Image (tube, rainbow, N blue to C red; front, top):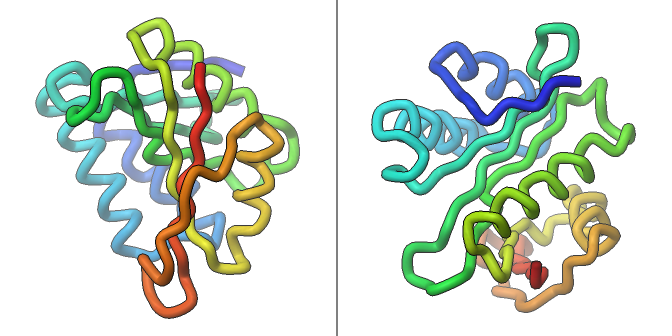
Length: 158
């Protein structure tokens, strides 16, 4: 498996396919990922504040993550997206990506990595994934995303 931090417009289709394969994301969320990717391509990682990792198997992008510093803090970074293609789930690729994000962010000054996720029952495996990987629930915002859909915020000191 190849790991790359370079992204191009050619990644749009692969990223969209990965997000859509999960069944977790709304169309507008896919649009947000595409806009972050476009901003990174236009301005670069440092200026845009968005860093990317792509995992590639036999020439095919199978997973990605985007993360970056929170500009309103001294040492906090956010993991914005982490997604693994449906056919590669449950193979520990998500944990590999998360560890790689943590290492790279820490090397650039991150002390605390923050992650937000939804409270809908669909996201139970996602919440378990973060806890299993050493994250603690730091807060809950009731019905943030919509009726019955809380925003859960996880954190981990690096």
